[in-house]
Image (cartoon, rainbow, N blue to C red; front, side, top):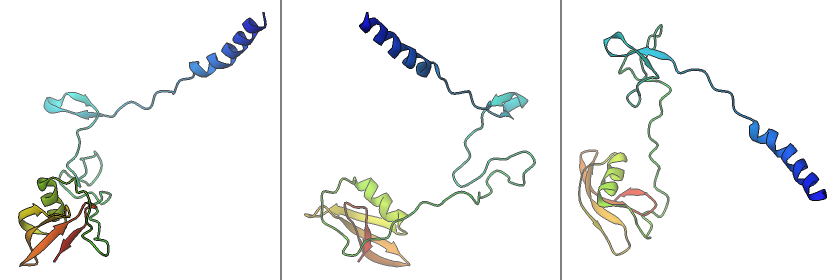
Length: 139
């Protein structure tokens, strides 16, 4: 009898908690689609641009002042650091280019797993290195 009453007490406490739901949010806005048909939701805007909003001054392709630029980390002192590098050659090239280098070429991983190659920055050809931490160093 005690076991039945104990189980009933646990259910009486647990069931209301299970029955709770989150109220639905507001419906998605309706925007005109192709051929003037109503369409729910909005199409994604290009990165760094704002969608056209009725009544606003923003036009397609205009920069959105709330957009953030990708953050390019600064190399740490002592970089490049030797270690197990998991960047592929194409990822290494993209990372180096994201740090302002162009014409990245001759990338090879050395015996310390540091990607090394040549690139152009400021009109000058320089040696570049990328370590496992993502630090890009022009040498």
